[in-house]
Image 1 (tube, helix red, strand yellow):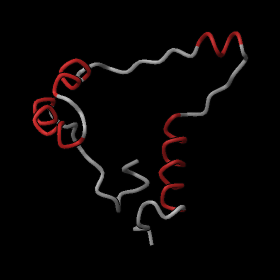
Image 2 (spheres, helix red, strand yellow):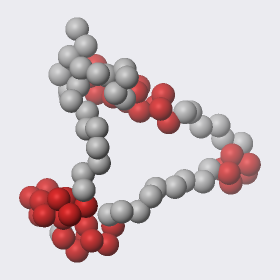
Image 3 (cartoon, helix red, strand yellow):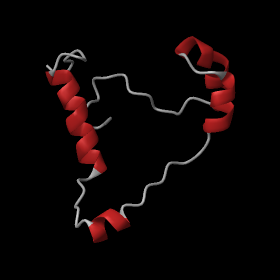
Length: 82
């Protein structure tokens, strides 16, 4: 998102686990939940749906940029691109 939406203060680094663990209750997450769920890489495999259902997926970068633009267009984020 950063190259296309440089006017927005997007994070540059991930939040360290221990910091999120400290503030998690303020955001509605238990510390047990954070301990059990943070630090895992996300991986998806679409081979079966591509082969069995003949689906074609859009590039995730394009989808994320279009979704972010939609948030701006719908007024959910301020338009800083002007």
